[in-house]
Amino acid sequence: MTPARRRYRVVDDQTKADAVATAIKCIEAGDSFTASCAAVAAQLDVSETAVRSWVNASGQRPQPSWTVVSRLRADLAAATELNRRLVNRYAPADCGMGAAQ
Image (cartoon, rainbow, N blue to C red; front, side, top):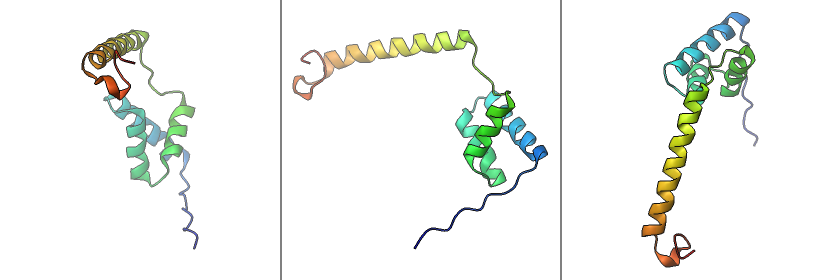
């Protein structure tokens, strides 16, 4: 028995524009791109992929500044280094991690 195929709704251009504006507002408020598109998709009963493609096609998707990207990269490097040091200090020698590796 094959599962029933999902029937997608036809969405007019104004509704797409409203969906894009809503997703962008959510992103600017701090939600992730994925979470924002999922929330909008659930309200419209369309696929998340559809909303993501509408937002990307609009050219309005907020992008982080280089300052933010640089700070996040530095934070990640610091966390990675700390994790490496902790693994080397506390990992059992026989687990394949740490200084005995």
